[in-house]
Length: 137
Image (cartoon, rainbow, N blue to C red):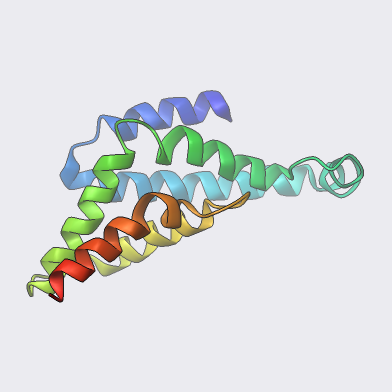
């Protein structure tokens, strides 16, 4: 999983800004589907070994790896935040944006906080609140 996500992270990092949201959303959907299949295959292990030894469940581990490898990649994290904030500013100025893509991306950031505060809270929320405060002044 780690090796695959390292390749995914490089692909996402090389994606132009105009396509970043779509690329990361597609990567996220593919990863979720893959991790659900892996979780289903390893369900017995999750119920017995993981629970008895207080280990991280397989699906959650997949989310943590995606967060650390893709969402917080040094060439993705800041660009993603900038694009999200730019889309919000564009909508506030009356332009049309892809709301479903925004919703999916923001949901991804919230879901990636499986073992603590969400990526949404740590990497996006403060900047969003600052720009919102400035907008309404």
